Structures are given as structure tokens and as C-alpha cells.
Image 1 (cartoon, rainbow, N blue to C red):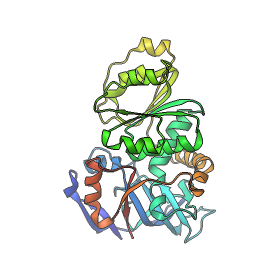
Image 2: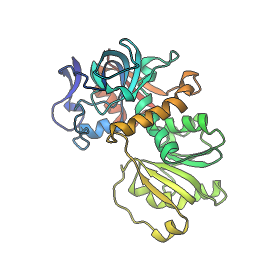
Image 3: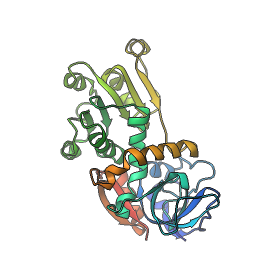
Length: 328
């Protein structure tokens, strides 16, 4: 099968289109004929040799697929060959065929294209699981979502607007994307290039109360302003560490304010845990995609042969929403 391969680790120059062995579904898995996938930040980190796939998963890049069921493995029920599906995968999405656990599949609503469906699993499920299932966000709460133009962050804004419409949403954003973030539904957008300590702006906006939840992928650099922005019993959910892994923490303040810091990753979770997340997402959020309340935001669709250009766009942070690769 055709696939995106790597000649070692490094920059975009290690990427090439080549031939790989077509995978075979194991027990509990299906083989998906991949129509479209996306480029996500973890793909770049894996390409650099810093984020290997979980044991047993494909070393081919790609974390989410949209396509049709090609073959059904032993013990799989409820899915049919030819059915339109989308799924999380631990790797292997940047290829003509990929295996996925049946428990991680979701049906693609008739109203969605394959390109739109390719955007759902990694970013929207990451945002949903961390904001709602782990972070416990409820209606009339307040939330900070950092980095307003990325896939997880735009997904988080859309999910909050659809599922908890009376929640106040604060977003930190590059100035070039602030207007679009505001149009998407953010109540307050803060320019992180001029306001690295955003906590004062947050306190002013919340009348010194602070926020209930923060979804953060920045890490060390934002720890102090994050904690200063949290209100009593607030939760900080950290899903990335792009600014570093070490920072000082005022434990006394955290204790007095009963704050929580929660670390979270999706890719390396056990199959059963991911299945539970997918089931909850399917029940709670997928209907919002079916009725077009939520429409995935696509910056550009690249043919897979232009995977280098797609990775460059992600590296240069020129996108708003998702970068799609059309496989076939």
C-alpha cells in the first residue's frame, strides 16, 4: 500500500511517499480504507524522534482516520464492510489502509464529508475528554483555552459553545488569529505576545473570581500565570509541554485555594480507556456534528503527495483549525 514513510528522524526532508506492507486486523480490530487523515502536532514530534508510538502500534505517522471498513477482524460485531467510519489510531493513518480497534470507531454522519470526519477524533476527542470528562466543566463555569488557533483549541471552543453555552470562554492567541477566535465564540481573547502574564486580565474579566478550568498545552512557562488565574477549587489540565517540563509552584496557594493540577495524554491510554472516551463522545458530542451545530474547521486539504507542505504549515503555525491530508 502507499504510505508516508520516514528516512530516519529530523525535519520535513525525512518524509517520503513509498510502499509499506498492508496491515492485517487482529482480534477486535477492523481494517479501514483511509480516505483522509490530518496532520497533528504529535506527528511533528514523532518525526523528530521524540514521540514513539505505543508498543504494538504502527510506526507510520497519523493519529486519526476517516474512510470505509475494508475488513473485519475476529470478534468484531456491529460494523459492516463498506461502512463510513472515523477512528482514533495509535499510528498508521498516513497510509491507504490502517487498523483500528472496533471499540474506537464512530460512524460518520451523512452530513459530514470524509475530510471533515478526518478532523474529529484526535482534536475534538482530546478537547472533549479533557474539558468535560477530566476537567468537569459545567454550564455557567468559566474556562481558559490556550493557543486559540490550533486544532484542539478551536475544537474546545466549539464544544463549549455547543454543550455548555452559558460558559465564559477565555482564549490566549497570537494576534494574527485573535479576530477568528473571537468570531468562533470566545468571550475574551488575550494577545499572548504582549501579555505573557495573562492572569491580571483574567482576574479583571472574572471580577477577581478566577476561572474554573484551564486547558493548557504550553507547560512550564504558563504554570505560574495559570495558577494565579484559577479560582477556588479550579482545575488545571495539562496536555502539552512545549515550553518546558520544569517550573516552580506555590504549594501553599494551591492548598489554600484547593486547586488541582491534572496531567493528561490520550495516545498512550489503554484500549479500554479510549473506548470509554469514544463511547461518551459518540453519545454526547457526535449529534452536534450530525446536525451541523459543530462543523470542523479546515485550513487546507493537501493531497498526501504534498505531506511535506502540510508539515511545513503546521511547523510555521500558519493554520487555523485542522490540516487535512487526502489519501485517496
